[in-house]
Image (cartoon, rainbow, N blue to C red; front, side):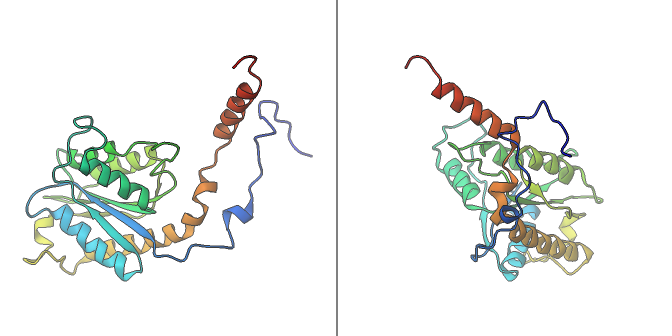
Length: 237
C-alpha cells in the first residue's frame, strides 16, 4: 500500500529511474577538468600544486585546462564580456569537473580564488555552468597544516551545486614541498594529491553521464509545470 502524500503533486513526483541513473550509452571522451588557483605571486604554491595536479590528471586519462587569474577584474568591476571573464565562463561550461586550490590567508581562502568563483554565475541563459559537476578542493599553507580554506571551498562548492568529492589535500609549509623547478617533492602530502586526483577522475566518470538526471528536482519540475499552466490558461495575450 502506497503512502498518502496530499502535499505532493503526483504529476511531478517520479520514482527513481535506474536507466537514467545508469545509462547504457556512456561518453568515451577524456574527462574534462578545469583547475583554478588562488594566487598571482611569481612563485605561487597554489599554482605549482595545480600544475602538479594537472600532470597527474593527464596521466589518469583526463584533459586539463588551467585558468590563470592574472588581469581578472574584481567581481562587478567590469562588464561580463571582459576577455578574462569570458574566458573563465567558457572554461566553466567546458569542464565536467574542477579542482580549486587556494592558499590559506587570514584563516580563509584567498580573495583571488573567491573572485574567480564569483564571476561564474549560477546560470548562463538556461544553463547552470557548475551544477552537477565534480569538484576537488586543495589548499597550501605557509605554516602548520590547516583545513580552513578547504572547508570554506566545500561550502562554496555546495552553493554552486557541485559534487564535491570526499577526499581533499592540505599541504603544510608549502615552501618546503617544491623544488627549484617547481615540481612537488615526494612526501605523504604528494601521495594525498595523487589520491585526490584519482578520486576526482573516478567520480567524474561515474556521474557525468547522469548529471542532468541527478540534478532534476521535484520542486523545479513543479515550478515549470505551474508556469506552463499559467501561460496556457491566460485569458488574454
